[in-house]
Length: 282
Length: 282
Image (cartoon, rainbow over all chains, first blue to last red; front, side):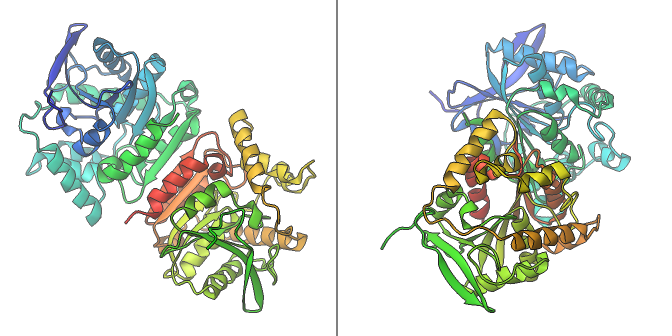
């Protein structure tokens, strides 16, 4: 039997509700797999092998494209709620009854919604660089920040350097190492379509616009939750991570120094150690 | 050679500047000892063996009473700045040129001041349940909270249950386990005098009153710093831990769920794991 890794795990497909979901699944067999929820504009290859392979040492890792995203078929919905239902359908299609979710940015919005919709399905949540519904500045990027997503770069993946990392030398060096990791795989996933990008942007904006300063809905999030971010997230302001910790009944917060929206890509070893302590707790 | 632990390490004394400092020192010989800075009203026995013995497995641990506190002689000053100079004198008297500081509450104020005064002396800081100078609500306890420190309890150590722990069953159970640990030692340290309590309270209030909403002085704190707190610290509001992380150039923040001013006593194993990852980082 071949032991697959991030770079060798084949892209597989599973169909449900007329959607053919693309996914990769690898790692040590475990009772509770870890499902990664991807960020805005991301496909299977934007996941970070420094994280996935480290987690795969002692649990199954599942990466997937949600409905309409990259190599998955179907239509990307313009609400987080529908994206959550699509993600739930994907997990159901794999026949999994309990999973842990590791979710970044927009993926974190969807993961929270899954945890609210299907509390028995999601055992533990790791929410990175994300916000509560109605969070501060969620889906309201200043024009100069929004432009980072849509300008042309010499190598297009370089867009992630200012979005996920800080301007410091150390953070940019970590960013270049991350770019090398996400471009290492030969059979790269297809690009995310402009239609999907627009639907995702609309979904994030709508979710951000549902303001409730009491964040009362977070009281219903009963899962043990680890909230992670950089000290200065320019995409989803860091204060939202603090708010998540303050309002989710059982949440731990970890903020890293000199870090932006991609703190887990900047400090992969430390992040994995922190996340495993959390995921493996009783 | 006897291997000493928290409960067996003898109380020793060292004199400098006319002050005879009481201290205990134990644990594996290491290049950088870990010096604990105690909270308001605390003496040598209010340190937690679940923490100190765990750290002592791979480094030297030093507990001490600052000037005028319990079994140390001298006068407890009514400024954090002088308390820092006293603590520096104590470390100097031991002949140590580099130490890590693990500091709780008022101890965290003093530790920050030591790190600013003597950057070469303090290598890394662990700041628990504390605030920056001028922090929000620092030294401005609501009367019902302040009263917790001065009322009579059946067993006086029970004052720490509402001060350091939350009302939840799990937190109170952790609190009782903590009380059992701090009362286990036979040769208990002497009590802190009312004179010391008043001077400490005045020092905290004066430090809290030095308002500067930009917290500009924290930019000078160059040490790698780990900031830790519970999600709902009723003694030094949790937002101060967030502010420390936001303003110290190289700070990591960890907030624990269902926890008050004594989160590290509530989750000693997890806290020690987190703190060792931080202290042992390159």
